[in-house]
Amino acid sequence: MKRRLFICSFAMATQLFFAATLVLQPARAGSEDAKSSPTEVRVDNFTFSPETLTVPVNNAVTWVNKDDVPHVIASNDGLFKSKALDTDDKYSYTFTKAGSYSYYCSVHPKMVGKIVVQ
Ligand SMILES: [Cu+2]
Image (cartoon, rainbow, N blue to C red; front, side):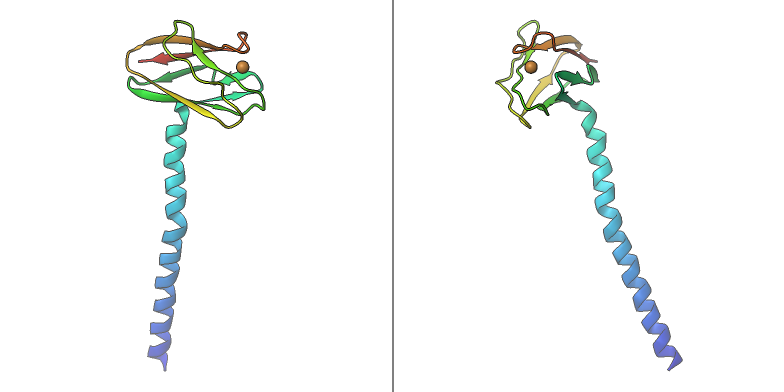
């Protein structure tokens, strides 16, 4: 009788352990997502944020429009230019050379930002 109880509690402990593992795994995956997010520029309230973003060479930068008006990402030297981005639209560009790249929104030229590639 006692022995059966012992086996039963062992089984429960095992189940709890596996349940805990399952709960922890998605959390770990989430933190990896957070690590890659610094290469994203949010376009929100007519502002690029961060205004200056530093990324390693060969890293893609993704702009995502969180405004309810369209924006166009355009580099000052014509290196890259997005189509008009509607709400939640994204545009990515991969910088293959180190340097400092200024850009603006061609719809609202007062909106400016900079990507530093190193
Ligand atoms: Cu704009």
